Image (tube, rainbow over all chains, first blue to last red; front, side):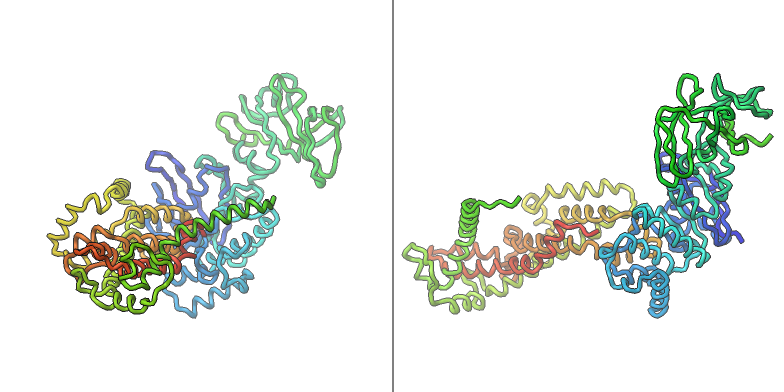
Length: 358
Length: 282
């Protein structure tokens, strides 16, 4: 069953700025959707439009078959977790969680039951009588989630909820959010700029750039078949090596001295990409090309090697190679690499679309 | 680094003690003078130690008619002052809260103009507009009434401005969270905004109470009926007696009585007051 439908949703600010030209998205019940993109791409605006905190300039938004464009946030049956948690500083944790229910006119017993239930689930029982100022960042985060869960909404909205936590806690909360969402089965929209968070949480990802949905799909689809160079560069860390190239009769011409054999009907400029983890070290004889090593980042479990394409003409083309385990190649030495063809990503340089398989 | 220079400590303590003496001496003199008979001041020197008339002086000042043509006792004038001061204070806070709420949270046409018009009234205190204000109050038949004493002083640009700043410092996310939690404008005002501006309200209460209590010119002009005389304005009246024989002991008692309520307010609300001016617990 479909839960939320965004039908050609758009946002134009009074000053004429098109924050979001037009987005279509259909969300199934219980699905975990992550909106991801660099800052200023309109992801928060889109979330706030779903919440009802920003007006919708054009298009229709439906929640459970009901048009909600003009509805107040409180009437949309949504709950939102804010980046800075937005807990009421003068209320206890209990009052914070109960406030929405109280405003709906629920009876004291019902409120008490629900709050205690959620507090149990999140391990907040001991904190119920404290004020937000006496809580740690992680606890506040939990209370903010509790406040959302207590209302038992149709949709959860998260606006970068983990960005104020330290790295370790972030990983822990990420897993917790995912488990909770599975358990509750509530449809969720989640905004983040962190692609790791996006990949690990999402059932489906929406990659946004300049208010446009670049690609919508499962994390693996986006990883293995990015639709545009933007998505290719955004998903995966370190980002994909993207090289300007040209397709001619011999194959993909990366530079005057370097052409990789390839057959396709297309002729013209393109962007050729390969992920750092798909470059393979080889002997000089079998190699497709060489890289001059400039810097090595050893992380123990893997090693990132930065360098430039040896056969580049004029402007040097940077490359990154990712090898598992520790390696200690010498700076300025040459590294020979092969590039398996099934890992190539080829985009039309003009339309910025993935080249269809020939 | 912790400095340890004995002579510096000594000098600074000495200057502090001197400062305290400078401020406290007049109060001391007033307190001592209030315990002497009227005759003690005739010789032209000021007594520095207590006399034996304390109970008598204080009792007669508080409960007998004030004299010099004033037919109400001092306790009654204190009551008048209190009603005026509280009226002005509470009225100012209520009106400023509401106008700041409107200006910060509601999008209505000429919002900014409204704010600046309110702000400009800072340049028009009672003393400047006293003649037209008197005319208005007289036409509305509010001379010699509590309404006449308080209403013209009740609008406050300072308080509106302060509350505006306070509201603007409340994060937008909090407002949005309340909206999602189903709090309408009135609920939001009472449940979120009021508790969050508690300390500011306390700070303003102190400042405005003292302002209201110390009003001199306006009560002097707008009241001719003894029943509405305030304490501060009648001190002056007690000094202007015909034969030049000022009853200093009674004047001093009245002065001390006039000082008490502001002190009580400051001492009682000190904690909240300082918090309101310094601390932002948002």
